[in-house]
Length: 254
View 1 (tube, rainbow, N blue to C red):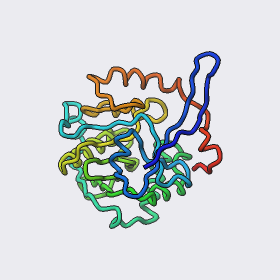
View 2: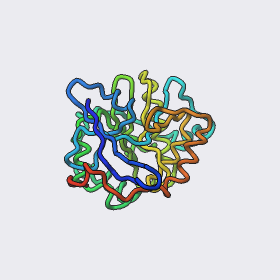
View 3: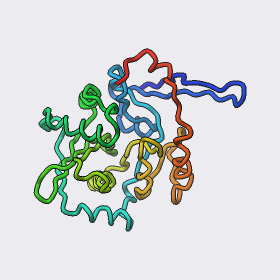
View 4: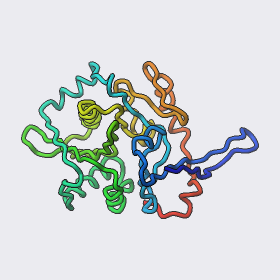
């Protein structure tokens, strides 16, 4: 694997601050788990970025110690009638209706511009998705899906989605917990649950995951009650950057 940084911006005179975005690129023979260990997640913001990863404040759980606490058990109980089926992605029947399910979810939950059809196709063709998780209700009707990147010692929940009947129901939290359960059962060491930011990303609920660790740009941090992380999440909206880094300036973005 190789890594590079792309200049973002600076504040030279007052604070001597210089910002760079960090990227990683998978090469033949690389271990995918090592890219995650370094704090990188798969990048899907440009059709020119296949095989690229970006550094961000991600979260993960150390699975040997993963156990549901009382709040997580309460969430899981709400969906105890649901069942999960895991299908290898190469065997899953991807069709137009299934793609539309994902597009409808992103438009409804995250906004109409977040996931255009071309970006969804790019993600599905990225080459690292291992499994599709199918979540069915008591009647056997599929209500949610997950796209998972599975390596020998790790699982990454890249994206998950659900239908409108489950909006505002804590189903997203349930899926995170369930993927963690499945990963632990197969003997994985870490479960990577994506970015953890507190503004429009809306991922602050992940701080309720038992034993969550987070990447601070240098190392994985584990702290009691996640006091520093929760404090950081509250100010994320005040530190947003409306700039493109140099690499993105000359690329088509979804």
